[in-house]
Length: 297
Image (cartoon, rainbow, N blue to C red; front, side):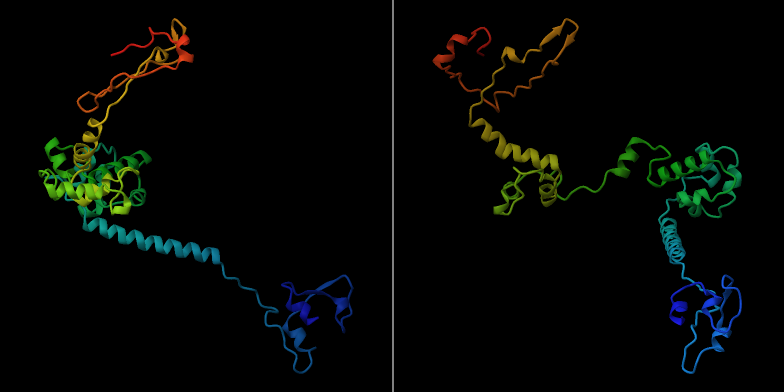
């Protein structure tokens, strides 16, 4: 019976199972430690969980509290980083001027009075903006938008020269310099197949890696490779070009075309010389040939 009590969470047994009790067989009774202490023999152990309220570890609540604690610590660290690297205000601007320039609306002065320093205001995140009392959802969205634009240097508007100066980036080491024989040899080596230690220009788009190796822009490197390899190769062979009536649109109706007209881009003969027409039609097909379709250039 003790094994049954240990294995259950409810300690309500029927009196008919207990010796010494005279009660109705159908009447339940709740047992406690005092009952078992008077009826156990020497050496028997009383279950410790009897008559004590079971306590459970709420692992779900623990994980939630732990996650909230980690988020708060991370947010506090990010806030300090944003404050440290916050951009200074425009010349003569205050927090109130910022709110007025972005057309914040009613309550601009109350919001400006909540912040002691410019860094505290301009380093706010979306979560911090939602904590500001007595402002509408539209004001929250506009404030988040203009703070983000300001921190990225996109607002307020500046001149085109200053804008390009902000986002010009750092020039590469060899950018704009004339090409030398050593540069050409390095370019051909980097453009060679992988077995030779190159990036293999015939597979994928390796120009971003080659340009970084040579410290030049991608367009400059690719154009130099075309001048060194592609253009001489195309000049050394002959090319054929044929346009027949089969490419004309099929007129299903006078106001409807099933196939749109095609645009043909024909390269110049300076880089792609045309071959002499030397097409020979087999004898079996000559009776089906229509000479007016083919126009020799």
